[in-house]
Image (cartoon, rainbow, N blue to C red; front, side, top):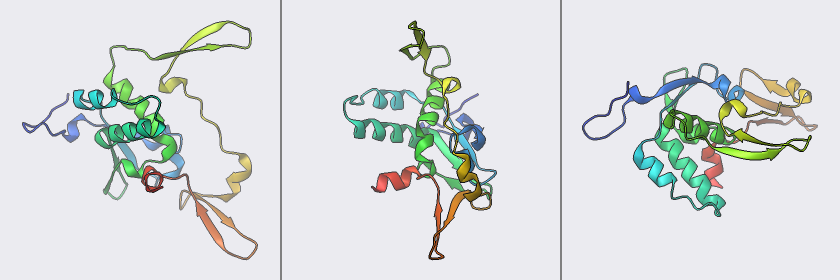
Length: 173
């Protein structure tokens, strides 16, 4: 069940917890991190529906607004994060998760594709149809489970630690 207070503020009861292992970049978050996600409310749907499909910046900003309203990050130490902590590559996955929570009674979004046999098929755009690209096995030796990042040593004994960028970093550029 969902609840809102009399001020219209969203309560934690509306949020469902999701394990980071479901996310494309799940291995880059601290072990034990959970994402709390809720369905979009009318005001968020209205705002998102005003997106300019020809303006990539506007599309990304509307997705960020949706994530800001509907996603919370909870770290293993109990601290809460925001949508800015979400890895940039997890943005679309979470947007589709919010969409699925919001439109549980249908309202399918499909795209037509041609298969190699020449037949045209309609594929529903939803998370179960996502295909994730695996990380090249050559990089496995550089992945550190203790830091959830890749660590590379250079020839001059310097060390670089890399992870996919989060939305906060992406927004700063």
